[in-house]
Length: 215
Image 1 (cartoon, rainbow, N blue to C red):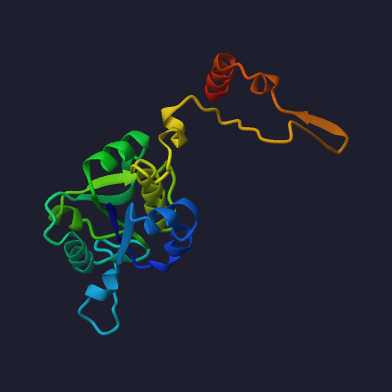
Image 2: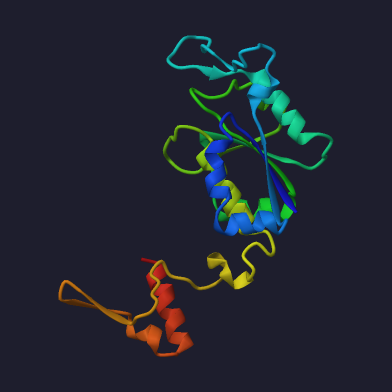
């Protein structure tokens, strides 16, 4: 079983996606597991405050290092082989190759979700981490990137999709897909399925898929 340990201030923000469809079934079937660790639970002050103004000035607040470090340490425990992923816009671009390699080599994956202006950089000095970005843009927090990574890696875990051929990256697939009926009319205009997909000629179908995949 592959276990994800998510370090986040807002664990409830992820529950809806994890409790639906394929990931829900994967969790129920014990193919994957998702645990949450909130840095607020590792603070020393009664208000559970975890953010402070940044040194050097600037807008916003920065999440303190110590609560995050303690949360990671708790998640890591005594496990020897753990992948720790730290989300940041300037990180290495996440892709399917990274997901496949991680799924193959690691059963325990810690995902560190930032908020506000980020997390004190000293966390990365305490632990060996992969700095990862899911794209050339900035989102409000690390929870969405964490869900993307959980989804992409989980698909690579044997049994999660049920059938190896369900992995689009392992077969000839196209961004254009069609289903029944083969013809429908909308506002007096007819919309047809490409005839090659109705031909039963698998070589021609694969060729069509390859061409549309490259568009």
